[in-house]
Length: 273
Length: 93
Image 1 (tube, each protein chain N blue to C red):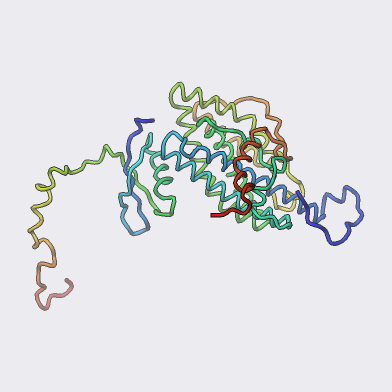
Image 2: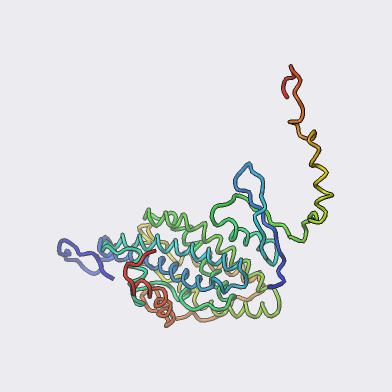
């Protein structure tokens, strides 16, 4: 990641003073914040797209394609904004296709394979419950671009949450087999919930640009937990995964995803259709 | 999932128009049928309202009976209002 070159040498200051009122630091913090939200949406869109032609029914293929495309739309708007914030001339495509794994800022929740439909629905339930709270709050951000993206996305993720919730209810409260597999899926995804609440740059929260992730925690856990319980499932008690996606530390699975997602653009720079 | 029932989908394209049959889909129950209909049939802004009806609940006329059902109406042109001349001096008609 690069920061824009500053025209004059930075003034002398203590490390404490750097926490507030430093424009370069503000830019870097905002860039990282927007990139995190963008990468969550982008990587989730790519994973969701895997289901097209593989869902239980043609109707679900289309539903998941719609959801993936909603996420891709959010990612595009956020990446474009991140590029503008950074001010180094990087476009949404540059950011999506030309960054390596360690430069991605998405959480681990979205990057792992999801080849079990129950896992896909458990993950979508968690992700969309979190995004629903996040975007609702971000719609009041003091950053107008963030507020605009969030204001549009909040309607989209409300539908994603509805869709995932209906499936978790039906599978959890379905047959003995579907109940067992849905519980296994919730158990598999639960360690990745906590990373969503990783603290962000406090100056961004203080200036009303970003939402404090910790403030979203009760509402998100309540939304997910109430669906899980209504589905006759149990909220697991598991230790959180190590995480670190917001610092660029990822599971090995992200590399394979990026190889597939970026291959065409890197092999044929500037390719369009 | 192969035994998911079939549902008929009706879309109202805008306020003031009737719901029109657009096709069918499979879904395990009514709530998901409605959502599948939203995803399959309104993803290009085709509608503002949706109905889904279990296909099995629709009672349809038989193609083999169409002669008996529909042909007798063919020569009853006096059932159209245009068959009649409006007498002179009649208002509000």
